[in-house]
Amino acid sequence: MSSYLGRIVAVGRTPGGRNVGVYRVSSRSFPNRRIGEVPGGLAVVPRAGFESDVLRNPYIAYHCVRLAGPWAVLTNGSQTDPIAERLATGAGPKDALVWAMAALDYEKDSLRTPRIAAVVPRDGGSAWLAVVRHDALVVKEVVLEPGRMTYLSTYEANDVRPEQTVAIRTERADELARAACEGPGFDQFTHPVAAAAVVAADEGFTSARYEVPTPDTAR
Image (cartoon, rainbow, N blue to C red):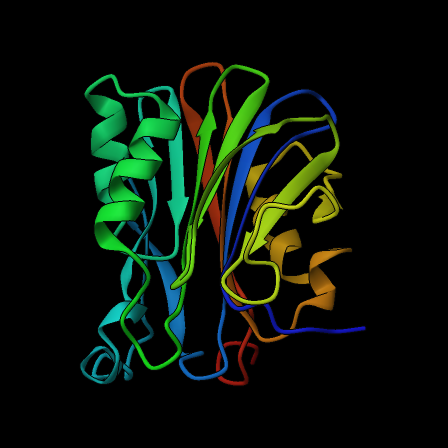
């Protein structure tokens, strides 16, 4: 059964034992977006010809991935940078998430869209997921298991629950980004637009992005 979850973050570990993070844009209202490279990470921006969409909704463009030394931060909004900057000062992931998410709170649009975030270490056995809704702030440590990802979304799955998992079948960031839109588990969630993925490497992280083909790009 298909369902619309909105934006999605996920943390996990490849079958070979590398820590990973995923961010997926799903949108019914603003699907004309892509993920582009920026210094130190990736950003969600309007596709060419749709730049004026940011005048209709200021929340649709933002850094979705920041790499901060041994940490990767993935979110659905302007909280990405302050979380990464807090980690860079030596703060732990729990402190960085609580500090940034509480300060910014949920997005003040008509849907009161929650802010979601993930912090993934290059090394170590656990990552962190967080969500701030109009009624709650949740920050939880997630134990990483080989071949599994735990996800969190802006709608429906907007809490950290053990049943919210999908399988990982690859070691590569590009394949993981595509799987976040079209692969088993994620394919049950509707309106995919684009996705980003990070995979721990010997030094830092590798990152990749994928855009769902549209009629004009599929030709």
